[in-house]
Image (cartoon, rainbow, N blue to C red; front, side, top):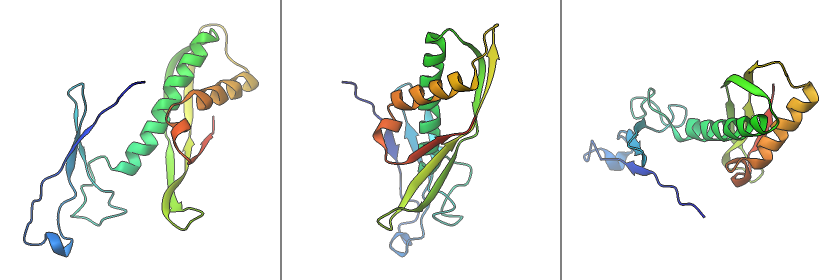
Length: 153
């Protein structure tokens, strides 16, 4: 078993308007390695200026976590199979929509990995599909969510 932590910190910037729902959603995420990331609600969920467009929002972080986990597992699978990857880039997309119960949910995440292969062996389309399947099956985050995850390579 492993334990993972994140410290989320928010401070009220407008006590006089807090109960009127007019306050900044800006906050920070701090991680054990010493990195602190500016975070906020999404401007799609809470209008500006109460959201911070430049900050990471939970929905983006969710998509990034799925993409990152898939990539890390895919790299491991490819290395075990003897394929050399020189670069991996994914422009992942998440869809926030009503789920089967009518609640807003991240219903789908689509990964768009662009892989630069090195060496003399390049996987066939069938091998690539198998590696993505194995990566999906081995990804801790994918195993933890009900979101549909698709890979378009």
